[in-house]
Image 1 (cartoon, rainbow, N blue to C red):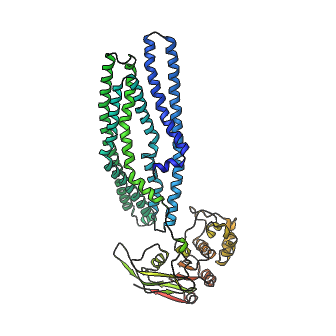
Image 2 (cartoon, rainbow, N blue to C red; image 1 turned 90 degrees about the horizontal axis):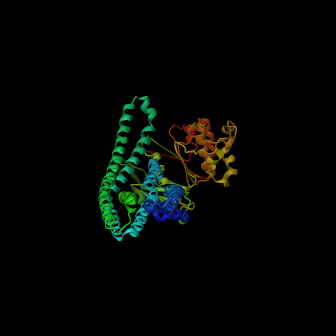
Image 3 (cartoon, rainbow, N blue to C red; image 1 turned 45 degrees about the vertical axis):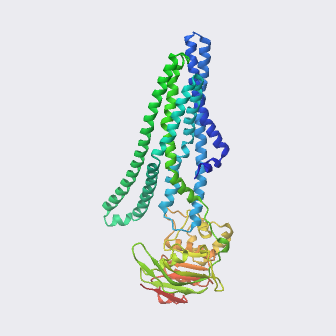
Length: 525
């Protein structure tokens, strides 16, 4: 997330944005310069020259509004396109990284972090160009009046460039703190509001209020600290600006009295002083804001980098074995698993008491969790150890994930090449009778807000998804818990006919359902 990348988003648009931002102060300084001759014309009672100067001055002011509007419009277009590119890269990074990202972390990166960097970096480009233009064109105008005024301006600019370093690091820390606290607050909201029904049931609303209040207070403190750091920088730069303006005004008076500049200068020196004052006051402040976002910009840049993968050397896993596998959690708990060997085509029923690590074993196999010790060896169809493409492992979680698209799209996962197979996959998992309940059948759009599909229908859709994608290893975490026993039996009979390796977690299967599997692996603590 660099200024170079921002420039390359659309170079022509960026150049015109900067050009308009510089032309705006140019015409304003020009109008002020004309005012000097306007007063001279009045003193000489030259009405024709006075009217002509008034006309040019009015045109200059109107042009300044047009240039200002144009630069703002071009900036908005540039930022929108730049953000769109960044968000696409961030989503691609998260997708290919195969790490267990928190939803709040990704939301914070896509929204708050980008907005913070934009507001304190890229959105400031036209403003900085404006103020640089005020300094440059004021220097040129004053130089035509007397060279000594240029010397004062150069001293002022030098001071303004040094000042940001006085508060650069504190401002960086304050900006990072705001980003961190915002991420923490979003995470807090996600974790607590997801269980609001339970809190209501047990009348624990006071606890929710207390937790949310503390999270909001911490975020407010971080924002307050950032504002304090910004205000300190503003006070310092403003004080220096006033001193430099005073020196400039006094020296100009001396030059006028000495006859070295025209009388009309007394009427416009205030305008030049105002422009210079604004530039000296705000340029260091804006440069300080930009420097303050460097760490955050670096983090966003890292989140947009392509993830290096070795997909060409990855192979489809058909079977696996584990050796001394264990995983430790932050609370100190450690789960140890027995050595397991599952051959291609086996149908395994995975059972065990709650907390013995059945779902955790699936997460280890899927690469969602890294093992603390031990190893997992994946094998191809011939039993040779391979480097697996974990994306080829089918997985049906306890809470099936659907998308706000059609049932067909949820089965094919948006692969149009599989559209013709969607109907047969729906039949195989017993979803066909359910589709007749919908007017549009398999083309019905899933409504995640109103949940127009039942829990059993959701599980059948996921089962159809795994079947149509022909995963050689299929992990099912209570994938038929929302389906009645007869429906479960029918689905299992079809599912277990396939040549895939199947590991199925279940708690309440009767003897007949258990006998459908080749064997059972029972986990215990």
